[in-house]
Amino acid sequence: MTQHLIVLPVILPLIAGILMLYQRQGIVRYKRIVSIVSTALLLLVSIGLVNQAASGEITYYALGDWQPPFGIALVLDRLSAMMVLLTSVLAVGAVIYACAGDDEKGSNFHGLFQWQLMGINGAFLTGDLFNLFVFFEVLLLASYALLLHGGGKARIQASVHYVVLNLAGSSLFLIGVGVLYGATGTLNMADMAQRLTELPPEREGLVTAGALILLVVFGLKAAILPLYFWLPRAYANAPAPVAALFAIMTKVGIYAILRVYSLIFGDQAGNLAALEQPWVWWFALATLAIAGVSVLAAKDLRLLVAYLVLVSVGTLLAGIGMRTPEAVSALLYYLIHSTLVTGGLFLLADMIGAQRGKPGTRLVKGRPLVQGQWLALAFFIGAIAVAGLPPLSGALGKALMLNAAEGMQRLWLWPLLLLAGLSSLIALSRAGSTLFWRSQRGTATGKKLPREQWFGVIWLLSAAPLLVIFAGPVSHYTSDAAEQLANPLGLIETLMPDAGDNP
Image 1 (tube, rainbow, N blue to C red):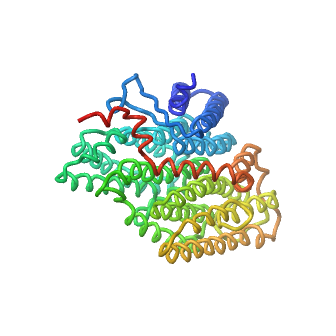
Image 2: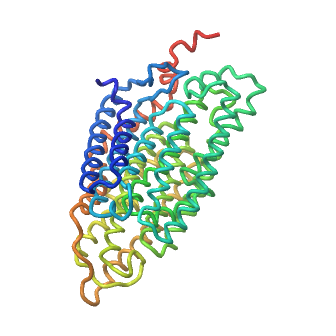
Image 3: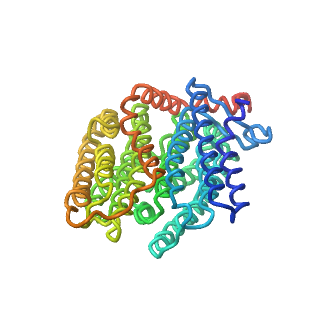
């Protein structure tokens, strides 16, 4: 049974989505039960996969028993297992929050939610480029519908930019995959890595072009400058549980850069090694700088959180640009922190807006809130965590990133990362004082918030102290994952054991 665990993160949400779309006019309670049970099972499966991958063994699942490089292979190593677990933890908080009523504002929410999970998990587990494209399309199609869930002019406007840019990205993705297939004759990533070591010099130009096209696509998914303009409005206008799940979407692009350019274009690729490094490093720093300024200009709490996502994107991509196991280990720890905390802040912003009434999440004065003290406490915890203040996980994650920088990298990363943190702190302090301190006149507004919403926020924001309490085992796991990623021969030999014997 354990050998089939790898495919369950794809199969579980697929079946759950089919069950709910089949009963699209069914009672809401039925859909909520199916969705919560499926997501909880996904969490349990993900924990099992992390335990399986923690030993360092790399395993794969050949669908239909068609062995690689000809068949579809799902690959499990430390990194893919960690990303699937992170997705399931985020999904539990988002889906329970949605059950407070957000899921009733449109049709088929839970079915689409499950299919997006299927696409995300498939992207983390797939072992070949074409199926990475397929799973990208699955998660994007579901995200298009979820972004429009509940309707409204603002969501439609935001979705137009989101859909158009991602359709353009999908076209480029297919072109890049086609170029690499034409130059190497394979789509399996391990097989492609093996063939690049024997690539004729006249084909290196084609492979370089294909690799840089994919870098543009992954940069669009990750929201790197100048390809990030779709993100702030899309995330700020999405329904709260959808925006929380979207916190993992930029990480799919970051994961793709890590996976493709360490496995296919790793040190064994000769002249084609590290093609992404100079591009990612400088654009990451530019993203960090612009996002740090943008948080100060945000006049809406949801938009502020969206720009905080961009700050985290710049930080994570800078770790990729440093291209050392220490930097990758640090960015993986920071990735876990930033995904869960920003997801929790999207949910919290929605709760604050619901209690404020007409002012919503706009950063203007309003009346006191019915549950203002508890909301202020949750906001304070989330703010100091995402800004990188001790003693929560944001401070530890940034310290690891700063410590991983070497030589001239420190002259660029240290001031930009610290200034971005200062900008975030100023913006969040201003937002908190406006929402909770300066709003003291008049009678309290709003109704008490449902328990499901409180659960979702507490579930995600609790990651900030827990990642510090369990910093030892978490950082040890991320360090091992980074070392495994830096040595792709283990994965290549697992999927292609006879590759070295072929002429």
